[in-house]
Length: 228
Image (cartoon, rainbow, N blue to C red; front, side, top):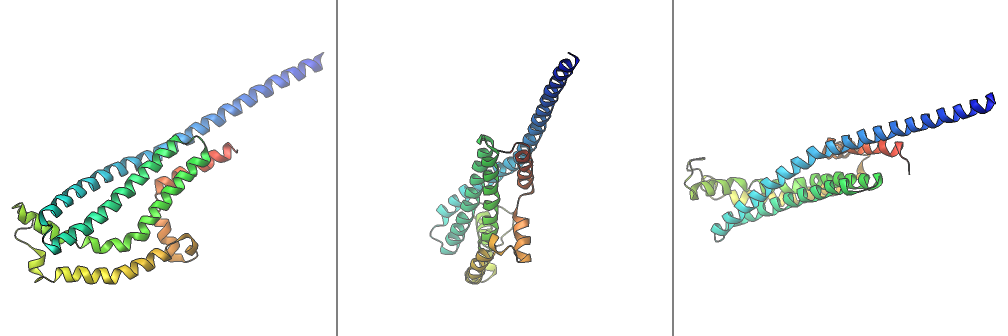
């Protein structure tokens, strides 16, 4: 009889222990899930702010283009920046969509896949970065022309085209011709298959979002706690 009572007591204690373990696992699961969400929340807020500025820049550039469409140097500079900001806008929009899918996904694997897509999208932006450099030269003529049109004294009477004796457009064109081949080479080199090259590995590491990486680490821990 004592043996039966001992077995019953042992089973009861074992059940309680199992329940305690399950409760602890659920608690850790919840903590890690919240940490992953918290890491992504700041990224989401950042992308929403960025996409708002990109949208504003696109609106202003389109207005500028409408008023200067017949002036070739200014029109081409505006178009270059419109293409640049359109890519930035779509880049942010895609990341916002991917971040939202992380919350909507029900499995850890699906969440991990969405986060990896965000990292790959960030890498794509880095790979295209060299091709974007010439577009930045378009800011000077557009800002100076916009200030002159609006009678703003932000840059006084400075006009980059006049100050460069009309050579600024040639500088932009030469920059495009030089950097486009370099940009194509850079795009083809900075890939996962070239991670064995230290400089490529360094660039890929720098292009990754630390917050997204943290979220992936938390989900990896969750996956270890809840193997499927």
